[in-house]
Amino acid sequence: MLPTAPLRPAWQRHLWMAGGLLSVLLGFIGIFLPLLPTTPFILLAAFCFSNGSPRCERWLLEHPRFGPMTREWRAHRAVPLRAKQIATAMMAVSSIACWWFLAHPWRWVPGACCLAVAVWLWRLPTAARVAG
Image (cartoon, rainbow, N blue to C red; front, side):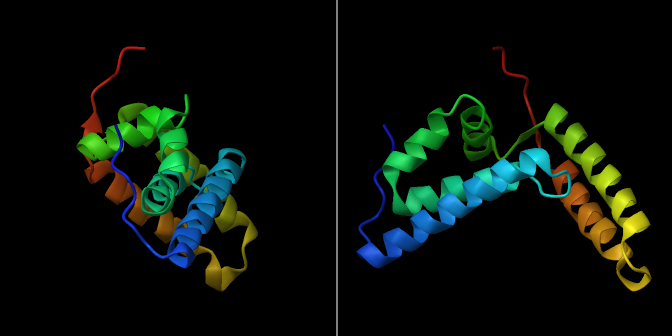
């Protein structure tokens, strides 16, 4: 059973809900846009929903695609090896594309951001492979 959201004024719950919905939307868009990551937005949505809507939090935790990743993160603060590999490859491809297409003074910004995220990502524990 999930813990219930803390009692908050309605305006705060609505703000948390809006943040969660926006995060889910950005995570969904990130499935199709290589430079926009999906996982951090889904984890942020779970956090927002935990503060604003137990029903939406439960939906996300029970989602067939996003639920296992979110539960694993909450339980162990771990990321599956395959997710680390795919994220790193996509960030590298996106950074190279940005280097090619962006104006000269800004070329390094996406690559620097992606490098920082990759270092953070690879420093996290690797999740044990779940049979399924």
